[in-house]
Length: 106
Image (cartoon, rainbow, N blue to C red; front, side, top):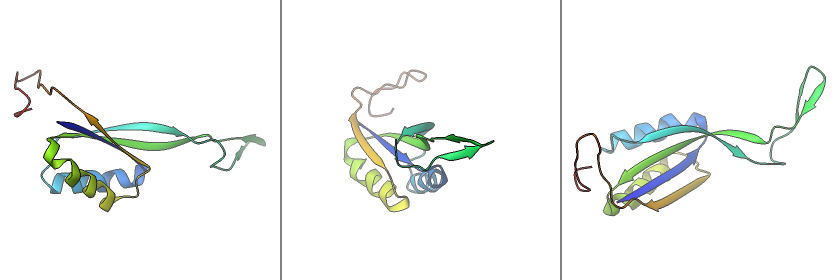
């Protein structure tokens, strides 16, 4: 089992989730995150005071799939959005706590 994590722009998160759902991957997690990027964004002025905006809003999409589906999931994410980062982590052993299922069924 592998955990694929992709950091995408908020406007592209729905497109990525729809592409995964259409491909038959129906269980994934999305989390609102902020990317720290000093110097990339211009400063904004609010009520006459200049503020440097170092945090960029992003969405993290996490999918846990069998090892043989990892390349397919990465291809789907890359085709459906311009991603900042994609991480692949090992997710051994996977266990569904609620149902008590093992790695294959979870």
